[in-house]
Amino acid sequence: MAETQEPQMLTNAELELKADARGSGEVKRISYARLIARRFFRQKSAVIGLVIFIVLVLLAIVGPHLTPHSYTDPDFTALGEAPSAEHWFGTDGGGFDLFACVVHGLGRSLIIGISFSIMTTIIAAIAGTAIAYSRGWGEKIGMFLLDTLMVIPSFLLVAMIVRSASGQTGWLMLIFGLTAFGWIGYARTLRTMALSLRERDYVTAARYMGVSPIKIIVRHLIPNLGSILILDTVLGVISGINSETAYSFLGLGIKAPDTSLGFLLSQGSSAMLTTPWVILIPSAVLIILCVSMQLIGDGLRDAIDPHSRAAGSADKDDESKEGDAK
Image (cartoon, rainbow, N blue to C red; front, side):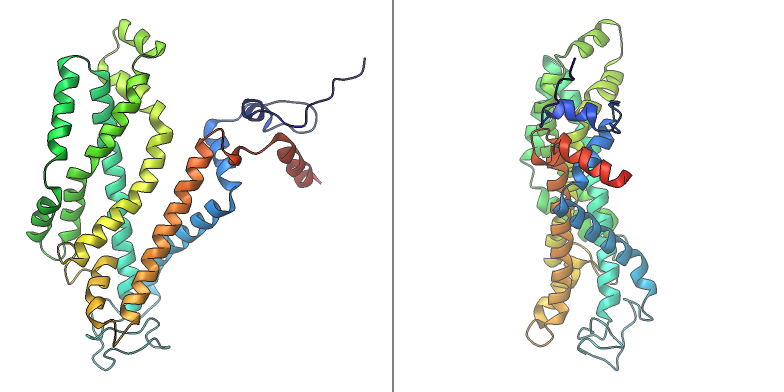
């Protein structure tokens, strides 16, 4: 009997089963993480964003060792000097090497953005799922607390917290202040998503088996929100960097002798007409950083969505594998 001809296109569910087939008709399952990674790297824009982000991280780590100048030691023989072989990005009005300041400021902004994003995601995941899992008065009290925290003037409180810190510890206080109020909106969103999870059979079974609420939240509710948490963490980096930039630009964030991209923008805004590179170069680095994170976030969103074009088709997978085998 002739073999049944295989259809040209397969659904996403069938694609997941056929993803590791090697020509002999063998079908293997692949992990969810590997499937997401495969969909992510199918997108050129996401790969470009990831490459740019890695380059910026390496620049922040290696950059201070590439120049003999320090961001804290001014060169009084080169005040407001344009970019040159000695000072790659030029100097500002005080003689500080702009390249040294940018690479240090880039690292400081990355630390603040990544720390803020990870901490707010963890707090929001625990608080949001805990409120969703609890019922009755527990849920009502939790939502009342979230609604109360939402109306607190967080901008002024964060500014007061950071203003009381010294120049060297200001970035730590800024992370603390941003995290203290940045998780509230995430928690409300995650609570809404977790409401449907608490009615699932495995959660009900675990509850009737006497599993403690903490274990149910950590083992069942939070892991099933993993895709959303990863996406929120990536996009949260942009939010943290933008918040740091806003506070520092207004003089309420990072202070000398420390520096960040927002602080450089604040210092360079007053000399934009006489030494434009002082503000244009940090602005370009900030824009490139945010665009790269946005591209990564869009790529992850399409990779997580099973109905997106990033899912591809089985035919393309087979053709690429046959080409690699040859």
